[in-house]
Length: 201
Image (tube, rainbow, N blue to C red; front, side):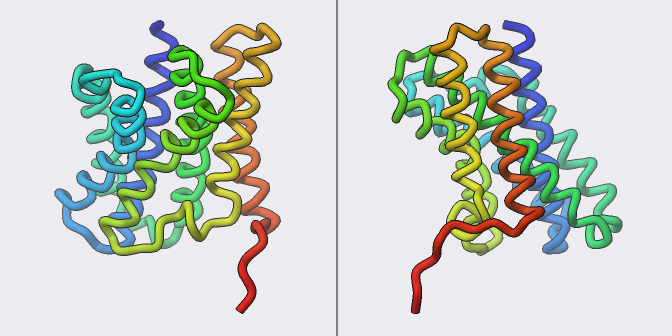
């Protein structure tokens, strides 16, 4: 479906921005920023497609994904001098991308007739897989392991999609509402500094 492609490309774009801005934070050159943009935006989707048996993954069969990520990486590169003053944009882009990819992962899992657990796991993998690659490339502890309500927001998106799907809501509305629920959960966690319980020393 054409609208589904646009939704997917939107997620690729904002996650690529997040990866590119992260590269700018570490003063990487143009190539390094583009690598982070590609890894962040395409990594989770490639993992998802590989697990679901969609071969080759969509990122390799539709060049629009590649060029969308490159465009976002170039934007991050050319505006790198402003990134340090506006790091909040990185977090905003990351939260929006998280929601979009959580919904896309849930939709893909439902189309492959996975159950509740499979849908939630695909939401998490699609939403966080690229971010894990990004963080490992710049030698950071992956966001999924340290951030306030990160993977949990993807779980919210996946569960929201499943509830709406079983209620007979059309796929497009399921994806939009699931993406919004995941992103809003992430925004609220950032705003109110919400964290899951941590181990005591």
